[in-house]
Image (cartoon, rainbow over all chains, first blue to last red; front, side):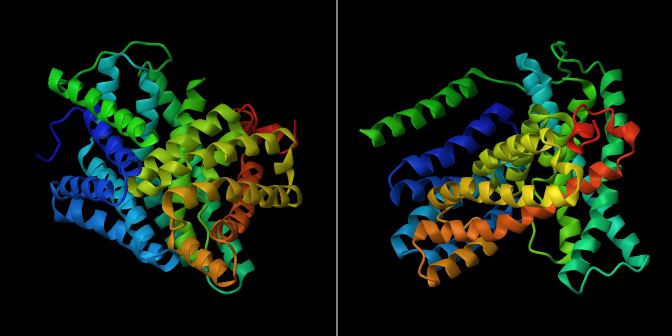
Amino acid sequence: MTGRRLHPFTLLAIAGALPALAWILPAPSGGTVTAAIGLTLAASRGLRRGLWPAVLTAAPFWVFLRLLHDVPTTIAIGLRITTMVASFVWLAATLAPDRLVEATVARGWSVTAAYLFAATITAVPTLRGRARRIVEAQRCRGLSPRGSLGNRLRALRALALPLVLSALHDVDERALALETRGMVSGARRTPLAPPADSAVERAARWALLAACVAALIWRLK
Amino acid sequence: MSIRLLALIPVAAAISLALSAAVDAVALPLFLDTTGTILATALAGPGVGIATGVVTSAVNTLRNPTFWPFVVVQIIVALYAWAAARAGLFRSFRTAVPAGLGLGVIASVTSTPISYLVFGCTTTGGIALTTALGKALGLSPLGACFFGSFVSDFGDKAVTFALVTSVLHALPRRTAARFPWALRAIGAA
């Protein structure tokens, strides 16, 4: 099971519940179970998209934890961080932003939050590409990003300023596009392809929430 | 919230996440990951700034999950930037850089307990190494953690405030006037 067919809210519930349980349940047994589940989920998205990114992101934490703490503390915190990393890598590889928007629209929630999330995800690669082009263009004009601290800070200003100003000029264009699509607060929208949300999935989400609450009460006793 | 301010939030959040390309080019130990939050607050007030900070953390979490617990820091940065904008501290580098240094102290005080309790002070390689240096200097675990956060945040927030000041002053007056707080932040209204 890769999770692609699951409802976006179910994906979010799993990715939220696993790290919560990793922190609530006693270490190291609780963290071992949740990290194993998280890594299995990440592996289900393939080696390149799932398991490797999770392992490579989590590995430095283990090194630095060992540098700063004793072995039991390293294992306890390391397993929790591994759970968090693996479940979010799986979520990022599985959750399609457009399906999340459709799911929130279908539920009748404000589309604003989903828009902000999806618009940022799509804007980041665009701005990163623009930033790289600005770096290349400024280098062609003779900008030297090395040398003294003052020199580097001046170079940073010359690189960052055009990027930020050009991004701010995009705001009007985006506002116009939103207005023409009827993006006003309080307006109900019709979902075109709402993701299927079965009774089993809804029950599973409540079960995950109940498990987290029960584990917390058990630990606080 | 007006459509323009709604459109500003994802753009400002994306600015925070895209500036790493410029930072990489100059090889400085900076994050600049609160630039969008501070800029959005200086342009449009605390609501837009907080929303930008939360969205920045949420999207950054998909890249590196350790960012999510630090969403609290983004909110505090937005509130601090709002106070700075109200006081017109973005009017020049002379006022903005000390304000940024103040934010560096507040941000490190806020992020230290999160970093210590959740991650054992290992959020990034640089912070972990400076924390190890703090331990080697004889500081307590929490003190070493604060030392690591302080070293990384202090300069970063000053540079971020200076950068936002540059942006606000470089904006054409007509463009700046479209955002409710921009002129007040630079002391022009």
